[in-house]
Amino acid sequence: MAVEGLYVPLILGVVSVFIGFIGALAGVGGGVLFTPLFLAFTAADINIVRATGLALAMTTSIFSSVRYIRAGITNLNIILFSSFFLTIGAVFGATMGIYLVHQYGQVGAAVTRLALGVLLIVIIVVMSLRRVEWPEAREDRFTKLFDLRGVYFEQSLKREVRYAARNAHIAAVFLFLVGVISGTFGLGGGWALVPVLNLVSGLPLKVAVATSVASIAVGDAAGLWVYYHHAYLLPEMFIAVVPGVVVGATLGAKVALRVKASIVKYAVMGVMLVSGIQLIIRGISSLI
Image 1 (cartoon, helix red, strand yellow):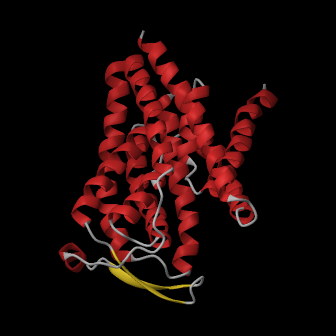
Image 2: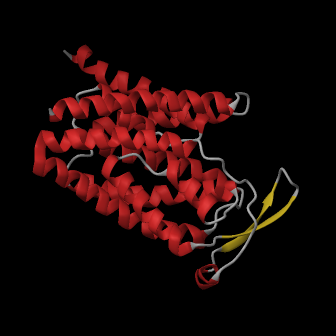
């Protein structure tokens, strides 16, 4: 019995290393792969999976943000602005997600799976969007009001790059919605935050990524607290999953320099597509 009991954490650990590795190669958080895969292909409790997905996304974001902080790319004002709206959305989303399953039982779980399947298709479209590496640094009244601007040294250009976050009022709405989605489905929000900060606010790609990982660490912690408060964060699952993802992400970051990113990106999108279709099928079959 003791040996059999080792199988589940061992499998979780191996799968988590794979998720962290692929996630680092493709530039997506572990949560966006972990949660759909476990909800689509296992019978694990939906709330426990979502809580673990948030914990996983938060942990990987903390580790990822260190290198950006050391490089001087992170901007505290922009992070605080993003985190504020992301946190409110994550708490609301987590509360709504738990309520939906509690109130409507299997129907609520089926609707959640179905909605997540559709969302994965949307995420694939978002990941396909063309991003602007060096947007023009244009300021508006919100930029000046919240001091959402800065400068960092870009190694590839061998010069300083000045930037400014514009359209803060529009970005705030998107940030809140990303938080809601993150809390409801336990995905983390890097897949959406980077396009919002880059395409809507006009931040350089590296600054958008640096802001995204730091903001996710804050916002997901708030959403995770809601699941923890309802006793859905299981220490044994957290311990089995998070170290594996950290190891995988570390290895993936090293290999990423030698592998063509587009190939891995499309492979991840393929995994997400299969998971999305399976989630939609499971959701519809449970409702019929």
